Length: 199
Image (cartoon, rainbow, N blue to C red):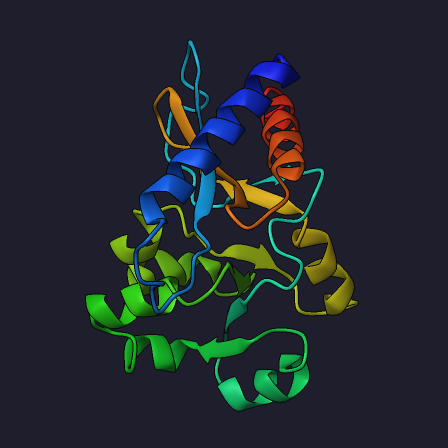
């Protein structure tokens, strides 16, 4: 992959977005938008849909301080006390069945965080509880063991992006944001493409 061509594409994208938003009122969500790279392959990477996301290492973190939500077993309070200072929100299974039962509530939850984690003991329950609002949009929670050095595990995940493989020849990877240094976006695109070839 030619770095010069990637750099030109990133520069053109950022200029286009800047021109598009110039003179417009700032949105309530701020000016930051996600940058994705779409990779097409000559053959299917898998024959069946996988629900466990594959980790793709990036050269730079997508966000220095990502907003992180973790899904846990009940009782939620127990895990909130244990993990509360390492993540932004802890959501128990019963909350997913109640407060976040509607599609709209799940969609709002999905749009409120940069990274979703899940206690690896409840991962099999999540496709049914989260539905298309998560599993149809690539916001699949990353399984993690909450035992051991949880903080260290979270730090490692900050410099990664994730992909859920399904039969097809197209992959969509989040590699940065429009507020990042353009050189970081270029580096992340190149490292993501190189990592995907190892999947």
